[in-house]
Image (cartoon, rainbow, N blue to C red; front, side):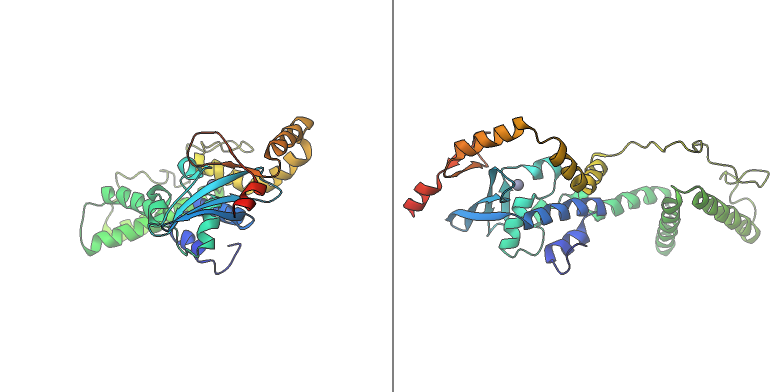
Length: 276
Ligand SMILES: [Zn+2]
């Protein structure tokens, strides 16, 4: 973990899978560099403008109901990815919220679901009940872990396969030879062959990656990419657009409201100061 003793991060670490936690942590850290301004407070409902100084030209609007623990942001990251955005996390942090509110924990991103999935697979294998099925579940889980741990490594695969051949031999001696008949492990000659899916040396392993693993990798490489993009792509057109927006913003700034479509609100700092 990048930061120690941050309660909401500890909680996220507890509930989310590691990939999701990584994305969550990235948002939290991003939130750390945000500023916020409370523009409205009514019956425990806060409206904030949240932005990163010198980075964001447009501010996002976060609405937080502190009684019901409802929070929403105009950037819509939660709708897109299923985790709270940096703006919401900033506001939760400001309000000393130490856990991710229940309603914003999507089951599909939690460790529980991964475990339940494994349990489902195993319960299909398992037809027994009581203590023996608990043992069966445990032992399958252990073998499963070994298999997963060694799957990317040819030597690791060999160790696994050898262990199974060895276990098979010893079990057959102990329990009789008929147990493993239908289970085709090892080859008749006793020589362990490569798995049928083995790729030729030097060839890359092409696995279809999920949206989350893509996002996860993206998050890890983002810093590097950001630097490259900043140095290479920031063209005259881009700065022209920024200049134009800054001109429109004038004395104030632009806000992306959480309702009312894609139109931006212009907030004039001078007049709002007069209002106060
Ligand atoms: Zn947001």
